[in-house]
Length: 204
Image (cartoon, rainbow, N blue to C red; front, top):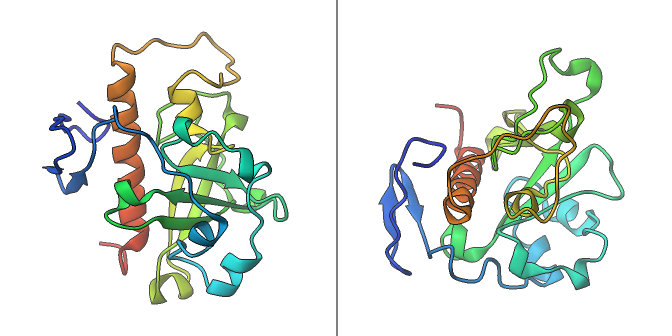
């Protein structure tokens, strides 16, 4: 079962509907084909072309280990309160989709803070999870309509799921019974649901 309560069914590289989300290739296929700078900057759906052209790519972009990534996520080195993620073409239905994120000012955030990433379900100390806010695509976003989600502060969900990076924890880490493949499936479905929500014209 995935984080949305759906059972994940693998059918090789054939797409199968799971709930309202089209599930693509099996996790046994390569995670992400390397993206060029032009592809990354051209993928964003909730910011202007000028903003996409000015954003700073992650440090070491040319040396990224794409085989360990299910999506590209990073905090903007030139703007501490901004972050970005890009979902690859195979996951988003034909071409990469980029989402720009903002970190709300501390004075405007709730006193209740989650320690659980809602994409990969990694538990952190509270400082390891950030409430990111994404403007909706199109006119809704320009009017101030946003979608919020608690995500790993460094946007390194694929590394946490694979055990390539360990969270800072105040308590002992709990062990899941799900296999690595199922945890990756769940993370991808949660990510796709978030991206689909950002692309909606307005809240439903």
